[in-house]
Length: 211
Length: 211
DNA sequence: CTACACTGGTTGGTTGACCAGTCAACCGTC
DNA sequence: GACGGTTGACTGGTCAACCAACCAGTGTAG
Image (cartoon, rainbow over the protein chains, first blue to last red):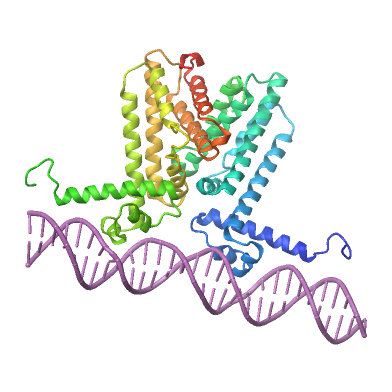
């Protein structure tokens, strides 16, 4: 094995760390410059590392971008799971999920990444697969929360999966609008839309949600 | 003016026609290859025309792409207006609008253009403006149809604009999902989602829509 | 504990492909 | 013969990917 397990930094650890560092830098650079105009050199620069090193850890630029998208997607779904695993009624849980969709502020541009990824996914099956998993994760979690509410007698809904698909779709669409034309819709209005649609879907009055 | 008005083809007409032809070719090529990997030369080739001619009619590639998006968007909204101007009840009109959102078949890839445009719009204010107008057009028309239904006593809705925004958002989101992962949702299910959400929004039973 | 070979990570310069936009010359029509 | 439309070769620049060389640790044998 290895001399003194644990906190020691082996070569493999170093490589993993660098890999993670590159993925992180890639995400930052892509968010800032857009996928189309992100160069390998930009990511290298953002990591204070040579261009060649990128190709040492990732065979091609595509590999790097794909790995970055996959890592981001997985983190996203994991965080979402944590969020619904907390305490509270089904309404509270649902509200937390809705809030997690929505960018936390004007400066939160994280959705830009997925706009780029959607366009890329049209041509790249690998990317499309990642997007399918991400979207599937969202929908699954929404459906779980709704089903739970139905079981507890809080919600009324005879097709939680369908309701989840509609809610997920609406949130995607509205967030695109919010991200692209922030002047056309305030964050407050976006959240209100989400809550209204949710009340329609789970058969409860709007007042069941917090103001 | 011009010698012999009407069907005669003057130089100006010829230029306009070529311009339109180039815009059309640009749309076809972008749909096929994606915005990111569309070269000016590709559009030239698709029109059987030299590369230089493109730059005679459009100063830059950006000009060409922007003009193409604007033309496509305007045509889209115009067609939508025609569609709701026809005869029928408010439910029928609303159903026609919902159907117009949805790609007519698996091979109808027209939405790909807007996925590309969303990604581009993040960085390009000109493009963003076009998208805002397009989306605004859709929402406005939905709101009109809903308001009309309310006036006639067919619908019940105290915020037609809000309902229109939610419906538009949901359709955008679901169509993205349908376009990207056609395996994950059939066209039939997509239309059913649209109708269910619509019934929620305008306060009518699902049976008011055709099967 | 030391000398040495080896491996993995890293560098920075290079290469070959690609592409938007320019330009000088050409053609047809009024 | 002037002008609008058109050509296609050319340029300047950009970028992904490759590569030769370098260096810091690690394991091994004396």
